[in-house]
Image 1 (cartoon, rainbow, N blue to C red):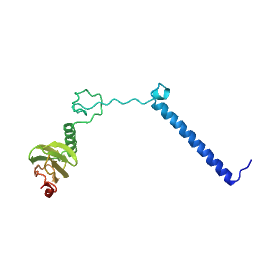
Image 2: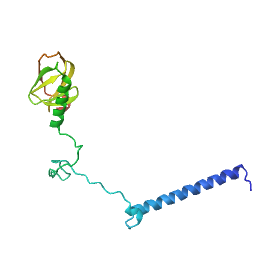
Image 3: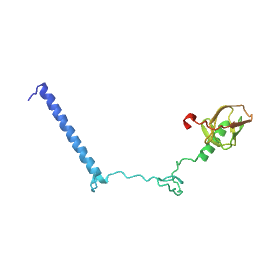
Image 4: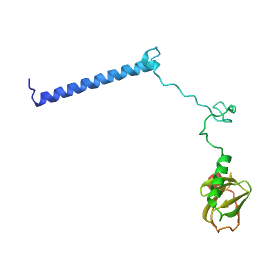
Length: 176
């Protein structure tokens, strides 16, 4: 039996609608089985909830501190002090035999220091850096960050003193 053009289109549309309806019904049935409280196979196949432990000293939503726990994770995130030490050691390793001794100080003391966008610790500090251009950044709470370019010569010591200034209140007219 041959169908004319309109009949074919009507048959294709009807078959498509039927397939969509069957797919929706199957999807609904699988979703219902997966979310039901019964002990069916689909409900038993739920993914387990991962166990997540907070780092030592972190606070929970209730405000209680978590006790320190031994970490068996070999890829743990280093603390800021360890990261600063690693960054300083890497910079000094790259400095080579022509390294320049750099003394970094700030007013006030204890400003955080970045060299070439790597955190290296707090002032005052002594570093050995490779000769050439370096970007220095110092910052402290409630003070304006200071950026300075360093041009170091081989084996020549350099003292750097940065005075950090208080932050200027934004929109001081709005505070009246």
